[in-house]
Image 1: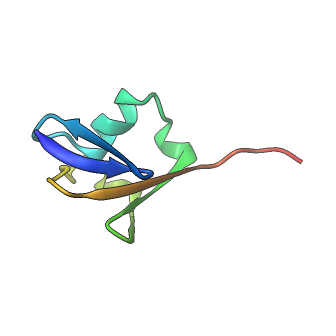
Image 2: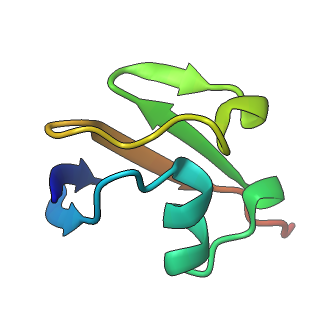
Length: 67
């Protein structure tokens, strides 16, 4: 298990869980979010390959349209 923090909330996920797996788990559209991983914006082309590790800190920002 990897113990990580998402938007300030501590959770545990299976080993070898990728960013894209996490987005699917929480039903988030990858085209409508930005991911900050350990203080740096993660490019979308890394979502499949980047595996979550113990103590990773993730901030997820969702884009919402409106006026």
